[in-house]
Image 1 (cartoon, rainbow, N blue to C red):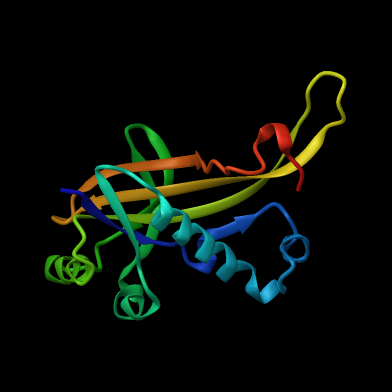
Image 2 (image 1 turned 60 degrees about the horizontal axis):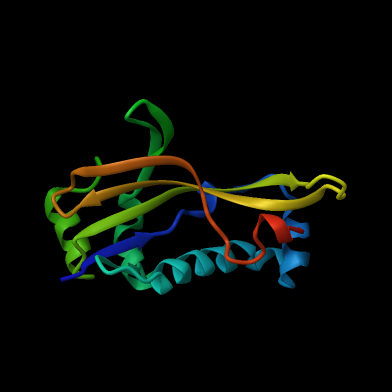
Length: 169
């Protein structure tokens, strides 16, 4: 029996990049106003499309978000000695948290607490250095009892294309 995991994306304030917003928009053939929503949708789709025998990921929808958005806050966190951007659930009552997960029939919730696009470069001997964008996430996972399962910092998102050998921004 697969466990359902609700995916809560970061807010605009937890989405950062070393690249200029105009450059990101240009490379994605979108407007600067569409950058955040485009990346948010891509992130949620990636989770929903992920195949696993133990877990099924379900994205939080905009209607579901509205009632609870004000309850999700962020803070400096530490998990097993590592610092990261953590979720602060002190504004969630246990009843609200249970109701929140219940509306998605979720057993766990993953809060993406930071989305960071960093400039990187890659080269092999004799080749020109190729610049590309590396995507990193901070996140917290909680069970339905509002107990933290894990908190992670700077987890590099793996893109199927281009990989490090096919890089270009």
